[in-house]
Amino acid sequence: MNRRTSTLVFLVVAAVLLGAVTLAGWLVQESAMASDFSQKNLAPSFSHLFGTDWMGRDMLCRTLAGLSLSIRIGLLTALVSACIALTLGVLSAMFGGWVDAVVSWWIDLVMGIPHILLVILLSLACGKGFLGVVVGVSLSHWTSLARVIRGEVLQVKQAPYLLVAEKLGVSPWKRVRLHLFPHLLPQFITGLILLFPHAILHEASVTFLGFGLSSEQPAIGVILSESMRYLTTGKWWLALFPGAALVATVALFALLGERVRRLLSPGSVHE
Image 1 (cartoon, one colour):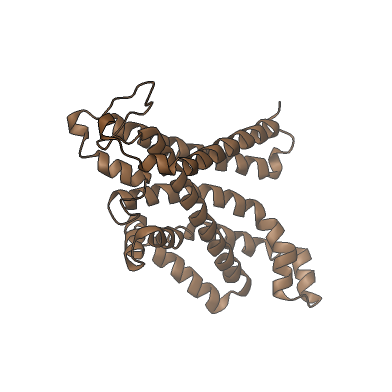
Image 2 (cartoon, helix red, strand yellow):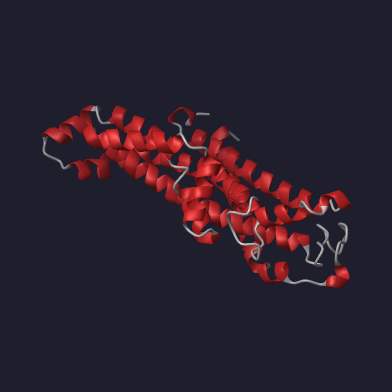
């Protein structure tokens, strides 16, 4: 099995695994909210693999539900950020002049503010909750990919076939649609996947600090925030399993992005 085949197998397995976690979390949402005070503060066992919390809620169900919510938010925000990066990167490189100056200034401005602070400010401005988190994360994670796409377009637009198309009177939008987008697709897909780890971590961080999702939702950030009050009493499982699940998901997506980058690289065709 060569590297490309093994990469494809890994992509399929990772996609199935993440899809199963997302679906399972969506299906157990009601169970994650159900409390049973006769079963509270139970350590991990065969009946409750991740234990229970101070309200008797099953931590496995809450972890799956929170992870499913984080994955959905991460995918949505990463997609919005990648689309913003693609649009602004192409506009900046294709039209140049004042358009390039404005986009470059905006990129420098956003990158000059710490991500977590910018996400908190945007989330507060939008009233926190689901909308606030989505807007905050989406509008703060597009800058690096926009710079990559801008550099690619600046390099490719000097290619002979694009110069000939321009001389023949082909409109800029048609040149972008027919010639640039196919070239930028590998960078866009790779950037989209690599944006997800940042998006999900910042969503969890903002929620953990109390500026994101509401406490009624079984989000990973909410679970970790609530568990901090019980760690000193020996309830280690309340933070260990949700935290480990979040780290594993982020690491899986990061590895997935690296494998996709290798798969789409022309130099890896014969590997």
